[in-house]
Length: 358
Image 1: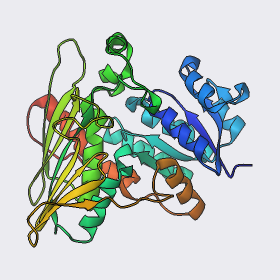
Image 2 (image 1 turned 90 degrees about the horizontal axis):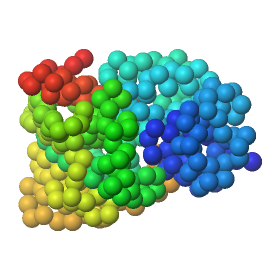
Image 3 (image 1 turned 30 degrees about the vertical axis):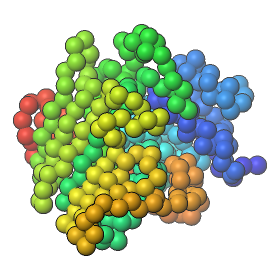
Image 4 (image 1 turned 180 degrees about the vertical axis):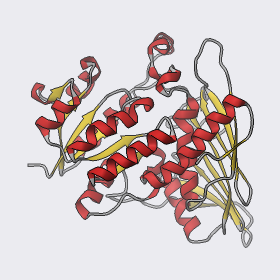
């Protein structure tokens, strides 16, 4: 018998397949149920993980009541995050929510309140949080290698959210264009667009790199593609007490960074009072400069061991050890990121600089 029972609720985001694979490969966990209102969206998971029919549901409440999981993985469209957390939390289960955090600060606060009322953990999964390069960067920052962080530069994205399925299965350009009109990724009401898809990575990990500091004001510009409701490119500039930071999102990179880094490269450049760190997605090293050694030099990435390699194993570890969620998955950091995101949306809409929203 597996120690931990895990259920997957809502398959809007293709990352559900990746997270369920983590459960299937975990020695002490098992998939006890999945639920989605559209049964066809679950067929890949059913086939991949051998999920029997009696563990497949179209109603989340029936799934939770029948399977009694310890942990629920949630992958709804961004605009539905708060509603799903509020539906699941009363069942007294821990929750792992796929990024981004929320469609608004109000929704973020609803989720935090629901999790607090249940007495269970709520973790927000940002896949970039598990990259050894960014983990190494945070260690170097905490060790004072570059002094106080005063700038975070972030550029990230991919060719587009419809070009790949779970396990990074590639989709043809023709099929992508056919899917766009019906995909929630391209619907404004569902929280679509590159800004809401990717800026949360940058501002949440950026807040983590800056030890929880929030900016004073935010300026954002989004593109307005012909025929689309949402942006495919955005640039957000935040003014902090010590300087400016930039967070850029892009659907339409030349290549996907997990196959071949595009130019500009996806990842972070950190500027501190005593040095800099270039931390790019998927690299096996970070590049460091310091006042004492201004020449750029490579620092090999830390070897990341269990239970800190992946979201499912990490959250199950926290449950077992009775520990809180820390780092970028902590709703505390995610809420500051949401403040920046909401401020960026307001700034882009009104085409002006805005004070950070409370």
